[in-house]
Image (cartoon, rainbow, N blue to C red; front, side):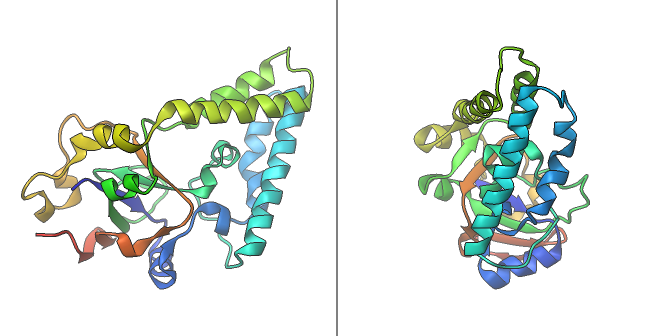
Length: 240
């Protein structure tokens, strides 16, 4: 089996997921008012350029889209997120991210507990999940920065088109699906006896870093093979 881990921001979030039966992407639960705050620093870069005006329009459109989605799926809002402005503009707020092989280290600096779920990555890929070869955040930022700096960008409309087209191109070039994704994940396969080890002790030399499994939309936790709270497994359904 090849495991992929989803780390949650708190044990309260873990309990909510177990109660509702699914892991919900940020677009369903993140307070839309937070988007402008997350994007404030990005707007400080070359703020008078046509590109910046286009970026402001994209941010407002993203906020409106969050509000529209949450009208159809009402529920409590949260400000707990690891998402950046670039992630939101790219559509990543509508996705669930999992770390193949072990827990993501991204949550450590945010003070997140070692709580969450492990899934069978092959199962997820067979149902449409993709293998992201690296963290794309820096590529997103580079694209936006170049758009804001480019003197040939003459209007907000052109800036928006460049940003949106560029974000899709980055994702297309940075993700694998189907058999290609399964082949790339093979190095993460559990070896006999690994299922008895703590996740960190399962790690093998040569594992790629900053790779991710990307799932579009809510992810049912009922297909998880492990559930963890505070670095302790509370349920394990990995077959013997």
